[in-house]
Amino acid sequence: MKSRKEQIVKHQEALRNCARCEQMSGPSVTCQPVASQIMLVGQAPGDKEPKLGRPFAWTAGKTLFKWFESIGVDEQTFRNKAYMAAVCRCFPGKNPKGGGDRVPVRNEIANCRYWLEQEYQIMQPKLIIPVGKLAITQYLKANKLADVVGQQFVLDSEHLNADCIALPHPSGLSTWFHMEPGKTLLQDALKLLEAHPVWRETFKRMSDGQDKI
Image (cartoon, rainbow, N blue to C red; front, side, top):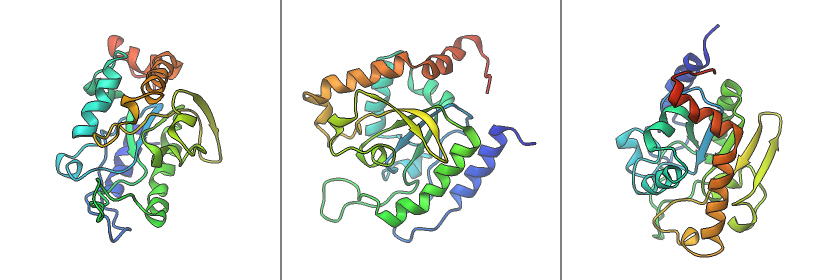
């Protein structure tokens, strides 16, 4: 029987060859093939990520990893120990009306959901971190970020049984997390992550060099 890491490697090879969505620009962006109980789920890669070959590789990533550094986890540690996915894995292109990247449409989200569900099956994550409103709405009913950021939820479905702690999107176009209530709610969310037993167990392994998965 293949190990989880071997299953993830095979899964990611298939994912990188996916061409289901005509308007998306490949290649698909994947993280390191790490077996983890933590899954971070973003919206979709930007135009830099396919070239650099990793999620959150540009400006938004710098902000995201500053948040994690504030609770004791640096970028490389996070990349080594958590699985980074997305609602859609290819660059959707720029918004023709301006203001950033195009938001993936319903059929693109549905096409890519297959890959997420495969990852749930392989890893059986216990902590989901959706980043940004599009990712959040795949897991939680929320009209506003303030309805969910700063709280912890339980996800219980056919494909997934895990806790969920949502974060706002760290885009430079967003002002939400710079102003109240977003500023305080972001800090509340980070405190929840820092205190979560799966987060604590995952990142303490860096000190003892062990991986129990």
